[in-house]
Image 1 (cartoon, helix red, strand yellow):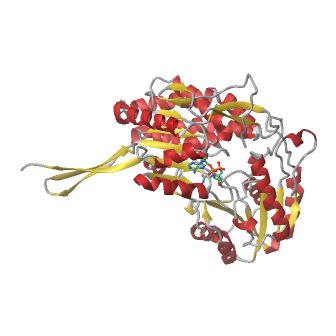
Image 2 (tube, helix red, strand yellow; image 1 turned 120 degrees about the vertical axis):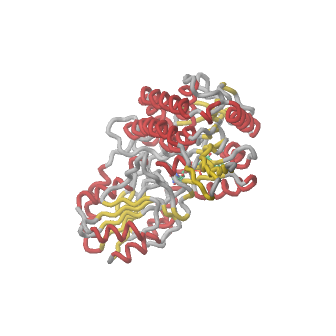
Image 3 (tube, protein in one colour; image 1 turned 180 degrees about the vertical axis):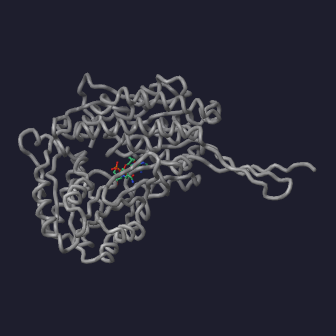
Length: 490
Ligand code: NAD
């Protein structure tokens, strides 16, 4: 993925620890554009020693600064952060598009989402309260919420700013100190945020630390270290399982946002045009399919199957594929050569298991040869038990499955180890309600897809995760409950 060369004059990102920019003990790694393989920057290949320094800085800040007891300062700090991100959102989006290859408007939306999520939780910093009761005569109980302490936040590369926001903002709003570990492919856009934090005096030094480097040892050390109280992890289900194992050492809290294989269900009574566009949008070609909630299994009612397939075959090949910085591009590259190989492997397997409708190959015309571009791919007649219907491909690949009635649709929708999101298109309120109540997923959308608000919780059922992001529950994840009892004298 990332090799070391000796190219000069390339930007170097340092770790942000205790409010200082520090070199690591492990040298540097290099990050290349997935769209043209240009060397973009170098970042720190941190070691266990560097991670421990960040943990010590976070612990010290948490124990000594007034941050944990001062919601007004936390609100002010987060609001300033939000405003600064908003002011710099075009630069952040440019960086994100360079390192991920995704279309610029998608990167811009992500940078703005970081600003919005931070301002939402800035308000909630002053809304952290418990309750009180008199459980017996002369006895007063107070149920208080306190910050968990030192929180390690481990982020993937597919939507690094938006995904960081929904852990970083509530963790800070609740009064914790954090260590952020970005994915290596997108380290730069995250380290840029350290520059913003450095300029905001309301953030005590060491309350936010950013350490780059490989999952093991950087993320692994955060997950196992005794002085880290909680890990907020977003990434692959297998990595989540490993994080849980490592976290067992000191029984730290874990919040896990993992993979998905989400169904979008189209009934014959749906608004046909809206449903088609909704299903294509759900497949997340705009991020080359690299979205955890991607609706990669499209369940279509038998009577409209042929019309649906014909329209998909007409629309999907028209999508413009290219580097995200080019105007009008709708689909960027996948993140790396390894990802390209993985997705191509699934496509080749899919050709044996299902009927290839469109795409199914790498794009190498002209400049595209320099990057990791795949044609948006759709399979029809995908067997619900096939590997491409069961495993998360994380590429621009969607599969169509036919169903006969509501019960069969629910059965197929639930026939996966994942349970992140689901969507259905229908005008029948009874079908909509049955889907909403029977499909085991953390979010269910009816006649729409992907509506995530800062004030509404999201998260996974089954192997899609543990805990919730966003909303009040997403804030309370980063708190501990304490019972204080006071005995009154007669
Ligand atoms: P990944 O699990 O490979 O990596 C995620 C992060 O974990 C990276 O920062 C990585 O360096 C780190 N990591 C890797 N090994 C580690 C270890 N042993 N210990 C600690 N940290 C380690 O995932 P990815 O490829 O970066 O991201 C894609 C995955 O993320 C997909 O499965 C996708 O569905 C999932 N995802 C889930 C959500 C959600 O909200 N549920 C959102 C986005 C992405």
